[in-house]
Amino acid sequence: MSAPRPPGQLLSILGLGFGLAGAVGGTIGAGILRTPGLVAAQLPDPGLVLGAWLLGGLYALLGALCVAELAASQPRAGGWYVFAEQAFGRWAGFLVGWTDWLAHCIGLAWVATTVGDYGAALLPPQLALQPLAPQAIALLSLVVFMAIQLRGVRAGSASQELLSLVKAVAFLALVLACFLLPLPDAVGANPAGQAGAALLGPEAWSALLLPAVLALQGVITTYDGWASPVYFAEEFSDPSRDLPRSLIGGVLAVLVLYLLINGALLHVLPIEQLARSSLPAADAARLLVGPIGGQVITAVALVSLLGLINTEVMAAPRILYGLSRDGLFPGFTAEVNAGGTPVAALLLTTGAAALLVLGGSFDRLLGMGAFLYVCLPLAGIAAQLVLRWRQPQLPRPFRTWAFPLPPLLVAVVSVAFLIGDLAGDAQDGLLALGLVLAGAPLLLLSRPASAATPAAGSAHPPDSPGT
Image (cartoon, rainbow, N blue to C red):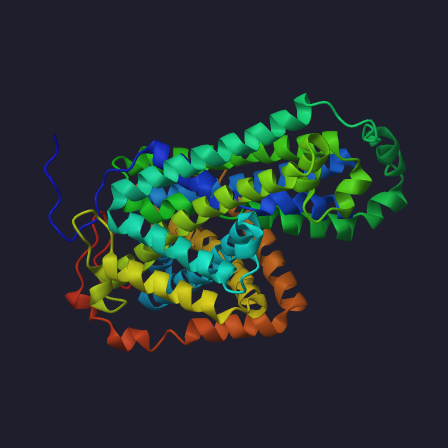
């Protein structure tokens, strides 16, 4: 039996089961219930629709191969901050960490608000009509998962594994229902052959370029979240083995599930109906089991979103903890309770998300958050390329296959997405950059680098320039 960790430190007790649950739970949300319709609207052929989901999964897999190397070589708490600080220095590391935390708070508030909307839809009519019901449910979900995390990392990991399992079973049940239940007489087979034949001409293929890009944007966004295990890198008992397996295995599991879900929807809904549907999973369920199908899908979405809340509430405090312990954030956020939870960081995260929920309007915040989420993986990929060049001697228990091809491919796609995001919504992008730079004064409240406590397993002391 290993000796207990001194108080005030994270607990290294997580394993592959939690890593897979974190990757799956951090990725699969309500988006997969909605995005298939958006993709089908751009690509009017079942083969092309499934191809888009396959390509999006392969892109996520390339990212997982890159991040697996970084996380296994630097198993420290803090997420993307760890890699940026090591490659580019403390100032860049702080900006990446601050950006990551802001993006988590925005995402957490949006997911909680969506939970409120779905939860209110399942309430009895007399309660659902109350104007504050969705907001109250959203805040309650934040409080419940904060309370679970306050109990410690064991409670948080157990809830993550349970919610991810329930989520996977619910989606697999949906897939089986689509394939096994008899279809109504009005539903015919998808005319895949006819649609495909129309797309063989050069003019048709060239006309598909822009729709394909738009479809892939939706697909890749739906895969976002696969990197969740890196936030807990320091808490794995065997990070060099379990982190790469969690990241790669998690992406592969999500890829298979997404292909199954889209195949099931295409089996039930004609491609034209799928393309017109704003919530195709609910439409398919209603066709198969009647009006109750809509409520069933609402319940499935609710379970998916609860798993996301648990992941976000658990991960975001680790960002502040890593920044604080390395002297880049006020020191009180590095305080950890006996269960291994950074309490002050957890309270700050939950409080910020609750304020955003109470604020109500998310259009501008979501535009800013989307910009931030594109920047973060790009910072990680850039860090990998720089560290391979500057620190070739750094121990790397896992090395990215076919390097440097995967990081270069991911970087090209990420830059293209960033340019597209700025071109489509420059105002939100600039506001997001302003929000990032607004965190700079927090460095004045942080401890000097020499006063920071070295991180366990850190490749250099906190006062190193990180190059």
